[in-house]
Image 1 (tube, rainbow, N blue to C red):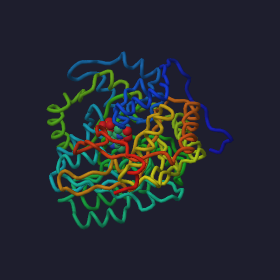
Image 2: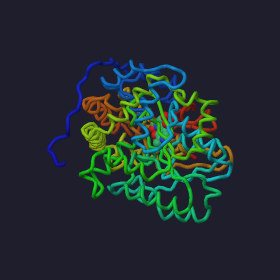
Image 3: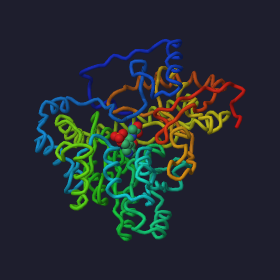
Image 4: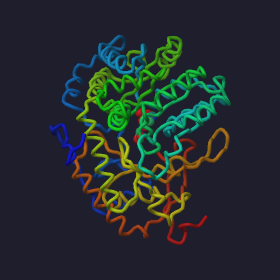
Amino acid sequence: MSRKRQPAEPYRIKSVEPIKLLNKVQREQRLKEANYNVFKIDAPDIYIDLLTDSGTTAMSNRQWAALMLGDESYAGATSFRRFERVVRELTQKKFVIPCHQGRAAENLLFSTMLKPGQFVPNNTHFDTTRANTLHKGGIAVDLPCPVSTSDEILNFKGNMDIAQLEEFLIKHGPEKIPLVIMTITNNSVGGQPVSMRNIRETSELCKSHGIPFFFDCARFAENAFFIKRDEPGYSDKTIEEIAHEMFSYCDGTMMSAKKDGLANIGGFISINDGDLYRRLTELLIVVEGFPTYGGLAGRDLDVLAVGLQEVLDFDYLDFRIDQVKYFGEKIKAAGIPIVEPTGGHAVFVDAGAFLPHIPAHQFPGQALACAFYLEGGVRVVEMGSLMFGGVDPNTGKKFTASRELVRMALPRRVYTNSHLDYIAEAAENIVANKDQLAGFKIVSQAALLRHFTCDLQMLSREEVGVE
Ligand code: F0G
């Protein structure tokens, strides 16, 4: 796959959505009004939005056409049958449960499988998976491979730490561990992929202990691309063949289809266990909807049925993963350290290393996120002590973040490289004035997922670094 230049977009633009850059005074005003929480800024006030790659995809002409096929019947809709067929074929599981997004799938699965005091090991929980585990009284255990946070440029830094998992399974056993989860790709450690070997070994380990093995597979296709590109023995296989092999190792999946479903809403659970299916659908009807729509419109199911097939296209993935890499190189060249190699859906910036004068408890990642908005009208998200810190509401235990990261997520098929070049220029200006950036303190926060809604106050220069 050697080539001189990056691939161009394997699609052309048919519909455009205008975006506008507010002036600096307006941006400063908006940021203050939002109490320095970028989640509270209205979308029209953002020029380029890299807050998330979730639900922000541009749909294809085939998906827009599929929308019109939507069958909005309450029960037994043909849209569901089309969706069910695609998910069954992809994940090779008998039972498919639609839900409106990933966290609804987490809520259903954990409400049904998890008892208070039980553990859920994961290569690394995403924030909502962790919150849903805690919400049911469970204990979320992260077991990323030892190199996941190293500065070395290595493949498959998203892997599970097999040795630690084995120790954990031996110590606690199936009575205390109702399921093991593999997050694919591993969002919280930089969108890093998991190798097929690691998936297979985790699967074998879970099987030998009689513990169900689930995927949290929001970005399974991006992961499959990395396996094809970087894991020996897979370069001649198609993305579809690789995805099939990945799914063959798990007992069940939960997916936020707002990512690699190439859709703006949707999710699902797929499993083979008939008894678990019965229990899940009983709850589904109470909290989401009838089992043939699960909180989605028929048209959404049709869009997903198309998106889940389109995402397997090699040219699409080749461009996407390369675009993330291109962007990472630009940000690094501007002088902001990034997590390397770049992963599947975002460039992760090491704000802790970039702003050593702001200690973790004053949220250097938030300082950088605010700087990107102020400098360029660009929205990015803190993924450090603000998102992952706080206090466990069950045990009172303090959480800490392993690194002070900022994520710049790329929506699928939305921005061109000239948007990214613009952001790299904004990054250069931030670098030139980095010593002026100050930290923050939280003035109000929720017990779970505090980063979404908390209010912050900017510290004065004198307060920076003071405990
Ligand atoms: N699992 C992973 C790995 C995720 O990245 C997300 C969402 C979820 C589960 C929850 O899915 O949003 O559909 O309820 N991640 C988004 C993000 C929000 O920005 O990374 P959801």
